[in-house]
Length: 66
Ligand SMILES: [Zn+2]
Image 1 (cartoon, rainbow, N blue to C red):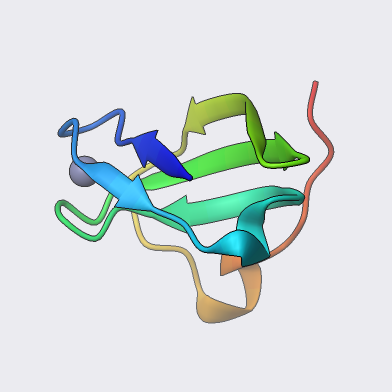
Image 2 (cartoon, rainbow, N blue to C red):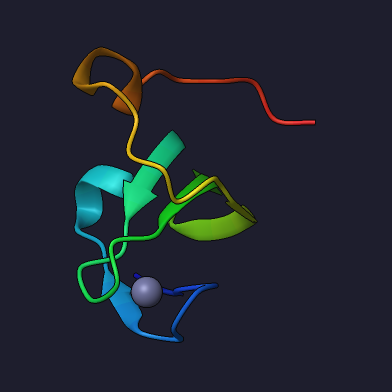
């Protein structure tokens, strides 16, 4: 599964681990953080998150999606 980075357009390649996932990912190219929601391997939502790096403890906090 690939998600286009909202910041630079880079296709972030996600493994099967992210087929059912709600949380944040990081673009490998520009480092922008995005909050994504996927279900059964399909992308449900992609939202830009502040590009300011979060403390490690908060990076992978799962949040509910509006
Ligand atoms: Zn990017």
